[in-house]
Image 1 (cartoon, chains in turn yellow, purple):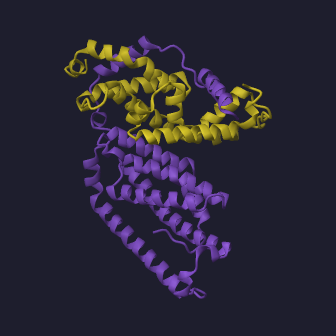
Image 2 (cartoon, rainbow over the protein chains, first blue to last red):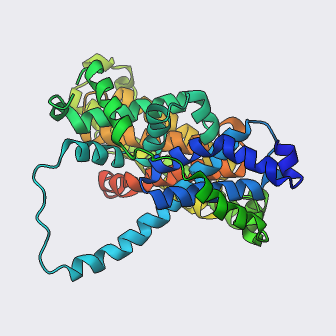
Length: 174
Length: 227
């Protein structure tokens, strides 16, 4: 299929798209948390893959290569979004005449989301891939270009940080 | 929180955290197929990172920086050696035969702190270089080797200081992670540009998110310059 797509066979690329798009979109959505961003990242990943098919050497599975591109696109994209939001925030704050009341008791779901969001990016990517999307350490290692041991260590640290930040407050939740 | 409780929590996270809706497969394909017909922009047609070209562009500067770093490291080592030999109260000879158990705990801590400061100084220099490397999109082989050495030292220090000085310990733990990340950029000898770039991006993000450089600078007393 890759060979046919490389030769310009659009149907072959559509098949590759159909075979991979669900998993790619799910990963992009887990990383972005917004539908528009997830769609942008997914499309960008496929466009880049299409444009660089001649660089795919076949050392790894096509899906692994595609996931690697997706993670790269998502991380760069999120970094740009972060920068943009940081620039906008001072203007929004200045425009706001009355400060918003700070919630003293955020819901448990918000606390969990906050704790995952607060994970350093290197932990969060592995945590999302392994614990939420079911990737094996071997797949993560190939996607991120690290050793399996590194992937395991990052997951362990991510879980430890989550335990630490959620702590006993979660007892009532589960 | 016990393991069962944490597993149950993970189940909830799986259900709720950025839970993906159904894939908008056709909607995305419409946009995608249109973009596939467009001519490939020159920038996008190139690899995410062309290591050879990037190295060639910065070749002279990098060589100078590498030599400057080696020279600076040698100077610091020389300075520390002279300082130790000439510092008042330092006794050579018989002191060297004193068993570790006989030493006062305070002096052991002070020595460890001194070593940690030197280590943090060198780490600060490395991280600054990594940040500069990241702007070019790749790590020089020298930087990766240096990171590997510092990672080993960090782990040794972590073992040596276990249970003491929680602030330094937390800093060393975070430093270990960032260094492991930097080593990971070249781990497995990856020649895949996009992977190396992703890994380098992750390393720099870890460095920035953890505010490593400012924390290291805050932890090093005045007078301990990085190599």
